[in-house]
Length: 293
Ligand code: NCD
Image (cartoon, rainbow, N blue to C red; front, side, top):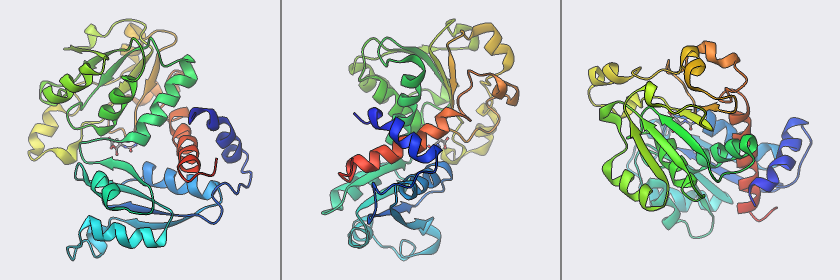
C-alpha cells in the first residue's frame, strides 16, 4: 500500500512537479536530538507535497524543555499549531508518550534513543524491495552496533513481517543484540544467526546492512575507541564475500566503517537510492497518514 505510492512521489520530487497533496497542512518537527538526514528529509517531503512545517530543533538547548516542560505539555501546544507531529528524542519511549498525549493529531517516531526508527525501516525495506522485487525469502547480514542501533531494531522488526527471512548478525561482543531483543525478534519468526567474524559471512546474500557504532551511547569513550572500527566494509571484503545481487546499505552517517573505495561499486546504495527512498517514503507516509492519498 505505502510502497505503491512511491513512484508517484518520486515523479513529484524528481521532476520538481508542484503538488497539492499536503496543501494547507502544517506539520511540526520536534527534534530533541540532533539529526541531519531524517529532519531534512521529513522537512523536504512536506514541502515537496505543498505542505508547511513548524521546525523546532534541539529544543533541549533552546527552549521550554530547558525550563522543564513535560513532553505531554509540549505535545498539547504543538497539536494546536499543526496537523501532525514528528518527534525525535534521545530517550527511548518518548515518542510513544507523545502519541499517547496527543488527542487530535498523529505522532510519528523519527528515532527514540536506542529504541526504534520506524521510518528508516520503511525506507530500508523499500530499498530492498526495489532491488529484489520481494521481501520474502531474503538473507542478509547486519553489522555494527546491534545493541544501541535503533535502525537495526526497526529493520529486524520490519523484516520479521515477511516469510523465510534469515539475518546474520555481526558485531563486537559488547554490542550484540540484547538477549531480550534477540528473543523477542526471534519469536516473530525471523531467523537470527550470530556470527563472529567477516569470514563467517555467507556468500551471495541479498543485502549487507552496515551501521555506525553509536558513540553517543557510550559512557566510556575508551571503550568506544576500542570497538568502533572492529568491522569495516572494504573493497577486499566485497570481492571475497558479496554476490552480484548483494546490495550494500547503511542508514548513515558513516564514520569510517565503510571504505570510501566501496562507494563507486554499483551495489552500494547507501549514498544513492537508499537516501532518495527516504524522501519518497516519507512523502507517501505523510500523504497517507493525513488522509490525502
Ligand atoms: C540513524 C539514526 O539517527 O538512528 N541515522 C538516520 O536517521 N539516518 C543512524 C545513526 O545515527 O547511526
